Every structure is written in C-alpha cells, then in structure tokens.
Amino acid sequence: MGYQERNTWVQVFGTIAALAVYIPWTMASSNNDGSEWLWRMLWVIGGGVALMTIATVVFSMAGRITREESAPDERDVRISHASERIGTAFLVIAGIVAIVLCAQAASPFWIAHVIAAGFATSALVGGIAALIMYRGGLPNVVS
Image (cartoon, rainbow, N blue to C red; front, top):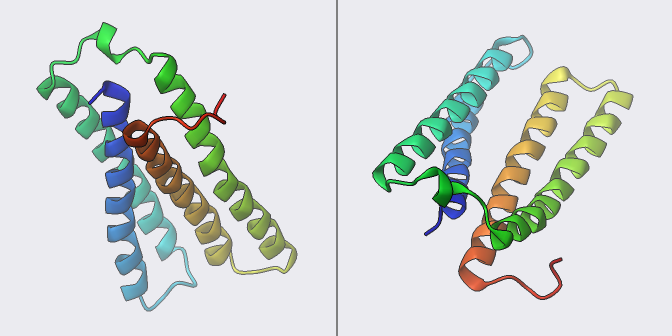
C-alpha cells in the first residue's frame, strides 16, 4: 500500500470517527438553538484534523516512508483528481441547499449543518471513490 492510499484510508476512517462522535453528541443535546452546537462542531472538526494528522505521521513512521516514497506518481495524481471531482459534487449540492436555506431565513443551526454535512460527505464519498480506484484500477474514462 502506497503513501497516498494509506492517507486516503486515514481520511475515510477519520471522517467516520468524527461523524460517530458528532452526530450522537448533537442529537443528545436538548438545546440546539443557541451557540452550544457551534462549539461541539468546532471541537469535532479540530479533533478530527488532529487525529488524521497524528495518524498520518504514525503510519508514515511505522511504515518507514521516506520523502521519495511519499511523492505522488501519475496514478496517484489521476486518482486524486478523479476522487476530488466525485466528492466536490456533494459539496456543491450542500452549498446550493445552504443558499436556499439562507434565502428562507432558516436557523443558522441548519445552515451550518448542511455545509458541514457537505464537507463530510465530500470527504467520505471522495475517499471511498479513491480507495475503489486504488483497489480496482482506474477506469479508462479518467484523464
């Protein structure tokens, strides 16, 4: 398993872990009208980034990955571009929904959660698409 693929696994599992913490934490709260949800969201985002950074460093050290081995090759670049295009579609959809919610004067709680869900879905779906391409090969349509 190459460096880029290992990082993709970290991204996918890190996103799942962050969602597994945030969703029950938010659902358990009785007050989502105030700014209480904002601090939970920021803590989970920051914790998720820290977790993924630490996991990437640990896996690189455990695998004795050198700088030369971590450099992406043409296949890594093609997979990255294709998976980003797939994931970005979900982020765009979330952005459009957030704009509609703003126009409807929805609660900031819902607007923020639609945007956060778009980022999480984008990372998760894009990461899974990359893993499928790493394991199954690149389709011929990817350029």
